[in-house]
Amino acid sequence: MAKRIGVLGGSFDPLHYGHLILAEQIRQEADLDQVLLVPAYVNPFKEEVPPAEGKHRMAMLKLAVSDHKFFEISDIELQREGPSYTYDTLAALKETQYPDDDLYFIMGTDSFYALEHWHKAEELIRNFGFLIGMRRGYDEEQLKATIARLKEQYPMRAEYYQIPELEISSTEIKQRIRDGKSVRFMLPDKVIEYIQENELYLDLKGRLREYARRSEKVTRFRHTQGVVKLAKELAQAWGADPEKAEIAAWFHDTCRPEGNLEHGPAAARLLQKRYGVDDEDILNAIRYHTTGRPGMSLLEKVLKTADQLEEGRDYPGVEEMREFLKLPPDKCVYNLMTHTREYVLSIGAKFDPLSDAAIEWLGQQIKQGEQNGQ
Image (cartoon, rainbow, N blue to C red; front, side):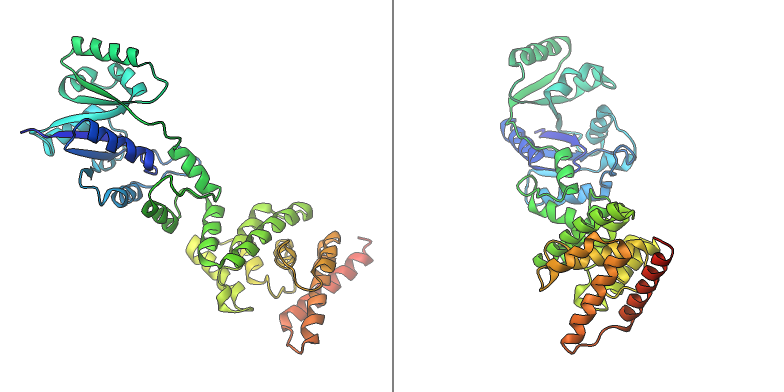
């Protein structure tokens, strides 16, 4: 006896509960023996943030439906590495996998109304069935009339089903991920974990933000968020590059367990190795954000200042030190570092020689500027 196989295509970038609810409801109401999910090829140059590669979308589909005995996945369109026509896909599936079964294409109402204009529309309509999901707001009588007309014109198999209105879209999910917002309850937890582990749908700053979120304790990440905020503000005010400031700020404390003096150089090495960032100014800002150094760039001064004075810092004297933000960059950092040196020496600790050298250099810069009338 021929099986009834539903075929649901889409970019699934990423798959979400809207897709799964549609597939499951149609499967149940249409009495399907199986639903085949077919991820489509997506042009990697179509969006500002490139879509997930086919291998990632396949992996997410597998995670989402691995425990559903009625759902299967096919990579037939991904293998073509280019746009596919529905007729060609269904014909290939019929020939290679389901020669004795009946294939039904699952589609929305808008797509169904345009069906007669699709590639090889007559062959498609004559050889395959259609299961139409109708959402609230569509004219049911119009849909019935269209189905009746096509059934009279062709030997067509078509059924429609009312499906729930779910305010979930892949576009919204990707935007929320880019904005660092939660997407829980919009897609399966296993898929969320995969997206996070593989840093999908993010630009560089987003990837660094999420790496910091995963690798840092909650309180440390809260500090990092404060550093990012102040670093961007200072970069804008002092004339540094806000983009570079944000990149450096997100990553500056990701290796904090390495130690007070070691975590900066370790984070710079990790940023270069893991994310391919070779900008020496960014790397140096991270590398020396604890100690400072002679010859500090403006970006280095921005990150060091933001690290010490972000709004979450509440150590003794921090409010007085925030007054230094009213000063020019060199004077601000000089005052911060001399204040820190006084405190470190007052508790009997050793002050780093590189920081001493940085203070001396900053003092020289300030003096030279005053001599030049700056």
